[in-house]
Length: 126
Image 1 (cartoon, rainbow, N blue to C red):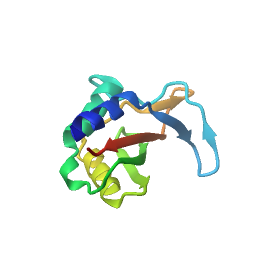
Image 2 (image 1 turned 90 degrees about the horizontal axis):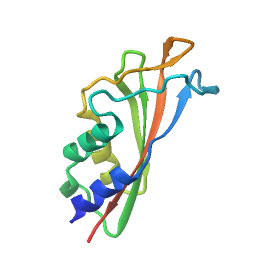
Image 3 (image 1 turned 90 degrees about the vertical axis):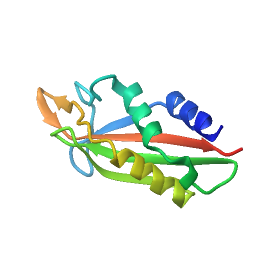
Image 4 (image 1 turned 30 degrees about the vertical axis):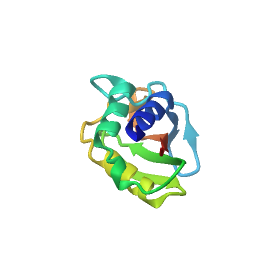
């Protein structure tokens, strides 16, 4: 049942994103970074497939926000999780770290740039 809630939360949640040029400047991109072979839906499904909910200790509803950068070569870096449940944060980082498929990088003025994503995750315990 926990997995069903988790899958629903992943599929219902949207990506919150911005482009990082420097630490102080954020720009809107002409072409956002895209996950190949199925897009955002496939990426969310890979997180669900890699996530081991038995490793998360908690009760009620738990929330975590993943932040990561899509590099110019399409790889994921700088993965960070913020939330009140440490086991949820660690497992979310582990689940996304297991995804090795490279993204199609973002572009500004036809130049490949780094792209920052924030992804909210929810998990409900029975």
